[in-house]
Image (tube, rainbow, N blue to C red; front, side, top):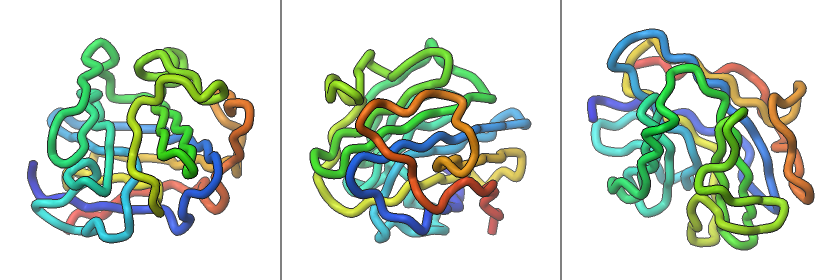
Length: 173
């Protein structure tokens, strides 16, 4: 991975939270990781990115590969694309994280409302919604925590993520 620029929400995840991220990648070779991380993840680093540590997990677009501790956890190659709206449902009490693609469903077929088959289970801790960009200015994201209408449906029992809803474009260093 090249140099990385990471942005994270100002809001920690608590209870059951739902948010979406609209991804738009306009240049060949641009990659971005979207997920969650603890505050210890470096915001500008050539070695740390969302999914590079045990304290973070990220789905990388457009290749749709899930990373944790710098290892591939799962590859969802059938969903490769550059303009996805991803959905996230996180239960802070259990560490269960569901990741989905609007129009396709939850990765791995789980159901956050029922608490079944999360995409990944993280250690229970304090996490932030996080995005890492590969340093390419051709990537844009909009994190929607519920300040505007969602593209998907909030799973029953989950709440909106407070304090998001503004476009996030990491600036390469």
